[in-house]
Image (cartoon, rainbow, N blue to C red):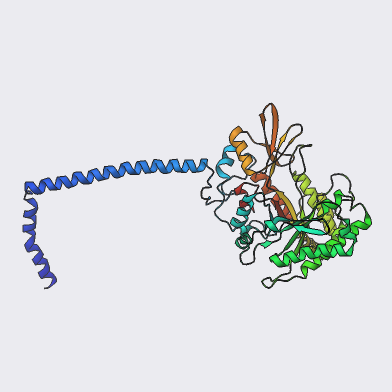
Length: 464
């Protein structure tokens, strides 16, 4: 049949279809049709009611989850894009946004090394290390203490090691796992003086690193040596430096099959003294002596204040002085770049890249990990109080609804509240205070070390 024939065939039936459409339905079919319409309307009504109830349930569930502390999904924008890095945050902004970090977990703002400390008594740090692993070059779980036992030296802390967690954090070799080993107790001078004990201490640390497959360690000893007068004795001071040098050499000689690099030694050093140079200070001569043994220095630029002298945790001007002091250690007294830095304040790109000395300073400054605190302090004025963590800070904001003040001299936020007729002053990091300190480290080519990553608010990681 042709197209024209099909069209003619169709047109032949059209009058019959039109007539059928005009004929009324039999009564039985008419009743059945109306029943179907009524039934469909009834089901639609039920559906609308169920959707309304379900929506209210989901809204209540969401509200209840927020109250119970369940972290909602992250934000598509960073804290910078959301305009949260400001000197005028409100407590409402912090409560609403602090648990909604940027969904991008891999973007890094810092081009240099970022070390994050994790403590076994704060489980949140373990979770943050796994979630934000791409933000870090090094993770240092605070596991080990080197101390004197009943007869010999002992390395304590292996019971805290979590091998499954290490696997979760260190994927494809990054970030590096460098547990902290801290000297504890007294006396430990024999470890420096007697060859047998020195070799035993180095062997304990090196063997544990080899057995566990670590990428090195963070070694903290300078503060204890200072407390017990070791550094004030010129002979013992040299012995202490010799110990660090031999420990670094031992670690550098360990190469694991999966590694493309030797083990690393990161050495913890104190901030510059507030008065004239003291014997306990880490000097240019010390740094020069350890230049081949130490891969990086963790600079403790926090704990500026305490309960006996309440105030900011890490004033930016003080931190800048500490960084400039390290620059002078690296460059020496005859380094014109160090002189310029000390005069000008924040390190300028022109000074950093001035010829070969500038390149040398860049390379050496990358070994400095400027300390950044993720904790704060709740002081009782005029004396008293102590450290607080992120969840405690949020609880204070929720309870007292304070107005946050910006200390323009120290570049930190704080607020006051009164309880039981006692005046409290709370210093805790803000996005603005942290961003200024991170930028200070970045401007001179230094890395950062964070104490500690489980103590902060989650949106702090947007800044790294």
